Image (cartoon, rainbow, N blue to C red; front, top):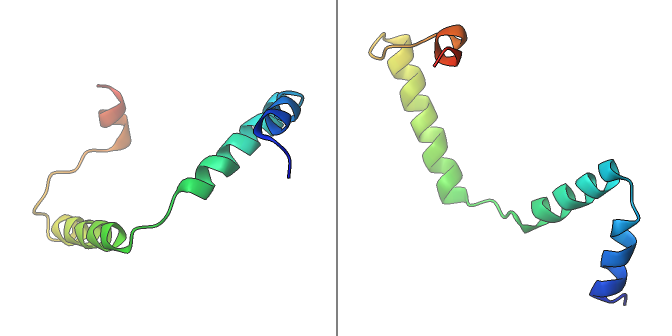
Length: 68
């Protein structure tokens, strides 16, 4: 097995885009989905969508939001 130092030194030889892809891949490997959190966000999104459809919330278009 390669040592951390060896892997690190080889990674530094990569092109910037390749290093970025490596970092993204490593970070993604650490992310573990949490079903409880995903379920809560889904419920929240559905609640907001229903409120939107029933005109119970005020909405802004993207241009208005981006002006701030």
